[in-house]
Image (cartoon, rainbow, N blue to C red; front, side, top):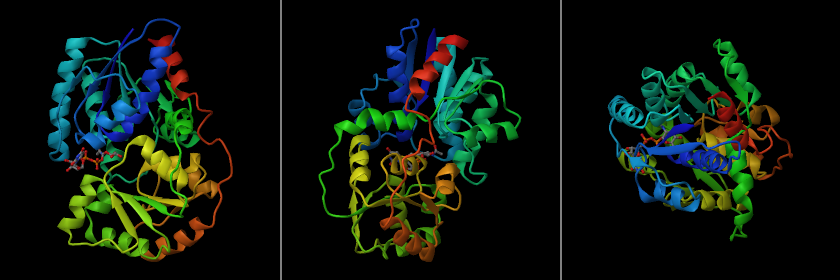
Length: 348
Ligand code: UD1
């Protein structure tokens, strides 16, 4: 069986590391995988470091489509993804998550009548202003196999009439944390919090970004902030300055991020992946968004939604700094990669 996998952005490299390893170790027959990098994330610390550190097979090709507006970038990816699929003639196309690379790979495959498998299907924020939400909904509706990480994701698909081809396998991000966790030692003994911000809804709106900074300023401990290029540019463009307690650094690798979260008192983020990594590593999470796709974290009481409201952030910081996270298994048992591979092998 031949698979073409499309990846392009940071969180996809991590998910791809898990599934590609499971594919390579699969003993039920040979699965050949070509990884295609769209080039969406191109800085060395946003891309290369993940391939090196996580032992991801070298991409067959990098399409080098970076930057540009959403329509332009997705359109250029669509054209080149189609070319790659035609040249490689896979039995199946594999896509991950919710980025523009996900949608482009899925749409190109759908138009060529190649079955699509979507890893991390069924997530919904129900906020159609997020580019990621559009990417998720459209990708799910053209997918043949939908690998869902949670009960809520399965229910979301059912509400949209998608019940065939849905497989609850757990979350590949949990597999990743379990696999890499033992390699990580947190160096820092002093208390600190970790912050990340990159969602367009926060970075492109000066009032929201300013609100987040005001909320962060109330934390009575250092706040480590590996800053995304989008956000670094936004701070300059909006003329905003970070509060005194912020310690900036460049974007960090996956293992460095897991070490940072593991050693932190708590996490503040608008990232989907980091909300779960906080949970997997026993940390409370303050989510700088008005809604989340990972609703079970909020329902379990380990994650609070604050939006960009400084008062709500301040309140949640007080809550988070004090708290423990109960050990529960909301996202499977850490064998999502193996399950995905078994389904692929059985179906194709
Ligand atoms: C993208 C995904 C988001 C995912 C995130 C992980 C979409 C719509 N969004 O958001 O779902 O959670 O990746 O980080 O696909 N840039 C650099 N260097 C890089 C990468 C990007 O400078 O290595 C710049 C781009 O040129 C652009 C901005 O950062 O100006 C944003 O990049 P983009 O790929 O549009 O989205 P992300 O915010 O990274």
